Length: 201
Image (cartoon, rainbow, N blue to C red; front, side, top):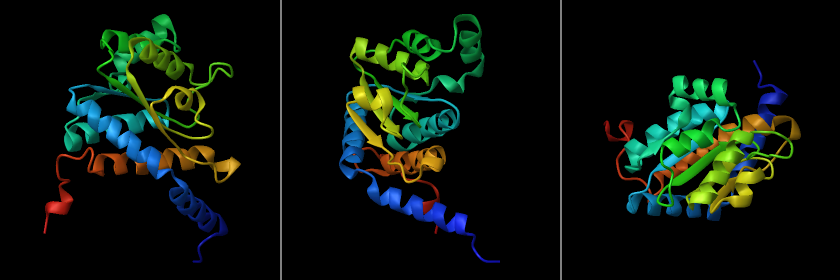
């Protein structure tokens, strides 16, 4: 069976996007997160939908490989759904961060296809969380798509996944978000522990 034209195009776009990533922004994010860890700060990772799954996976990697204390609100479905049910979606992450005592010593990392946009009413819970981060002076990082949205506007360091195809913004952004965070946890500015399979001969 031959490879379909769609498969070839998707892979071609993915390869082009990887080469188009801003290495300076990635290094700045790695160095910022490394500095956060070294001064004893905590990292709170925020994502919605597929990015929430990424957040949970990334929490593991940052904790285990980088010795960076990390958490995500979506790992506690009971608390998250209680907050959404009782108080609404928009404040679900910001109120969780308040209980977590988010402070200037900490950092917030956003995974998002669009970065949040209050005017268009998209991922407003991310916007509210970032507004809180700004209020308390926490550092803000992002791995986002499109134009970066609110995350890119307020972040100290932000990696924007470029757009290769208007029809495939979400799959490319979410796929390459995983590439970028795996790069980060492998980065010499962050990595502290070896990964298991590389040590097996």
